[in-house]
Image (cartoon, rainbow, N blue to C red; front, side, top):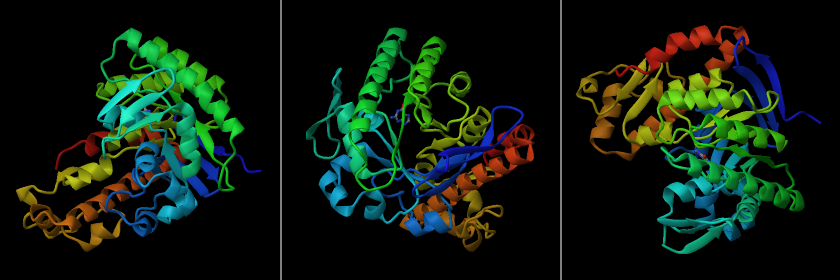
Length: 377
Ligand code: GUN
């Protein structure tokens, strides 16, 4: 049987190029995973995702899909791949993080999280077992352990208590998963999540506990929640020193294009973030030359292509002036074009990073492009 994760090349530092093999296809790493929270990557067609953006895996969310359309519909559809007509790999988040950030009220206990739906105010309970059950019903290729993510800043004792709860919940996730097989005939892999806020000793303990669990891949959570960038890099560096080298490492909810490159440099293989789509809807475009605000007056009569270095059809077929006009006129098409552009750019960014890892000059390249990516155009 094919190994789940195969590392093709490790660079002079911690960056590596590899390949994940799932029952829905292969994923070249490092990879960025577009977020499709409610069975839709906002404003983007599945065909565009596959053919123009070249997404290799997308994300879905337990919290949202459980509330709507609900698991009866999901199971009758035969799982999320069939429901949304996406036959490449999918990863689902476990719901804990969304309860923490979205539910209009929540109460955490040893048992799990009781929360009030942000949609209709109804009350629900997520336990580790319930999260696992829902993720079986959704049927993602990779699914996440049920964890608690604390806010930043966080008192040491609270971070410690929460991390220990996450570790106890992980045991329950593993036990439930071992006793309850997949529903749709293909393999699902559970990734546990390292927590511990910005405290090095807690992160070390958590990374050791997570590594010890022996899962096929591991994730780092609780970052990009408001801490300074340098703190995020420091913790990521410390944790990737402990997590097993031969398994994929997923940094959750990160980030800007420069965060992506720095994280790859620290040994991260997988990342996701709403930023390329959310910021696109607010007229912010990421490019190889820097960040553009498409509402800016300066693009008013700039009829040059949207992005001369862009890989997507929208970059060649539409001008900056046209896209600015669409944003100023509040046209839906503006959001669609910008989302396709940003996602195609993120996928191009990780593809080029991979090429540099394989060529052996990743760090030199990264250090030269990061200041350019951060520029405001
Ligand atoms: N997405 C971003 N950060 C986190 C986290 O800490 N936990 C989970 N489950 N999802 C996340």
